[in-house]
Length: 271
Length: 287
Image (cartoon, rainbow over all chains, first blue to last red; front, side, top):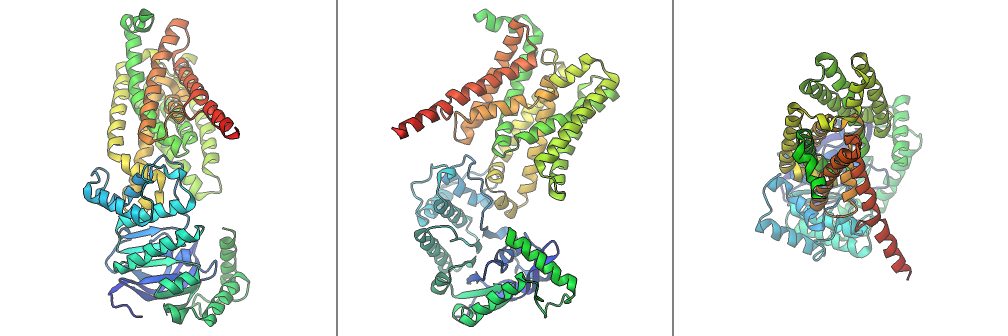
């Protein structure tokens, strides 16, 4: 399946990392408007780094990323452990309404249109009736639903989600997947890091298989082959051990370099 | 009874001035305190209050007991510590609470030393515990101005402030409001501490900010009632403390903070979300 849309994100040999230690190497590729792209890979493969890099929260160490005329502010981003302070006294309705922040700013009140949007978002994540509940009383799955509702209200053309279905029950996971495919039908661009390959095969037309380096990027059926999956696991394991991690790195295979990779990786594993 | 409550304020101008000053402070400090408590920054506010001391002391060394000089010095020192603690936490191994404790001790020692270089022990007491009963025109203007600025700022920044508290990354990614919100919040907090310093001194300045805010937590769950109740508690403590100090001959600043402290303890026991109700509910569950 090819995308007919114009480019939304263009990666030019992009390398991302922390403290000058690369965590995702040499990404080349294009995300088109309307793509529904899954980012998969073993733990420590750099999926979160990839998404954090797109929203500018991780330093670019090499190459560049073209946002195609948009700014990070036009994106909706749902990080894996959203830094939500659930003990803060705010109810579900007001929390979901914060998704309208960019349109309403500090003063404008949410008019009829925004209220309809909020009600519709709550209905789509099956949280109708929870409006007055403080977010601190929600279960993990319900909070994730509320975060999806806020993302719906944001009404962004490009949506990034980091493990949106981690640590939620199967029913919630399926409901959230339905929201994501709904966004796809609305021709929004959706990029989601996921670990459930079955879900990816069912719902995501395109996949990026990441193992520090991009292993494969294309239609899901072509990417998620047994050979590619084995290769990605081996690559990440190679990164974890002290074996020479990438010969074609281009940073020079000096001893110090390899050592840097190894320590960076241990830090990731500890985190 | 009525005479005991209104008499002192009718009879003495200094009591009226103290009342006006404290009520102005009760309007502005508790809302800031509510946000400080919700953001788990109560300790930070205490450290900033201490940091004001050396700054105000330098103002005192230069210009004597002049409100503008001490206020300017306190503002500079307070902002420096607020930003410095964050910087140290971000760029060194020390966590923010540890760096705040260090700042806190350093400021107190430096401030007391500076005041003692020129002032008497009466001056020192004034610095440490304030002088509610001797508020001059300058101080009253300062307290009123700070209350006005604080309430105006809250009206403007309420929404981004709430978003910043709940999900800082969300606000950071959706615009420039994030840094502005955080920095202006710190600035308004310092302003309130400088104002409170005039009335309550370094050691008690955070009292009317934090105690009403934590006491309100035992009564209300939502943000708007929290702020309203905190303001009421602060205002009531001010009146009660001033009367207590008048009738029982107690030092006024500590009497106000003791009143607020008493309300805090009572709220903890008897509040709608306090310990006794909690114990009762637990008993019901056990059957």
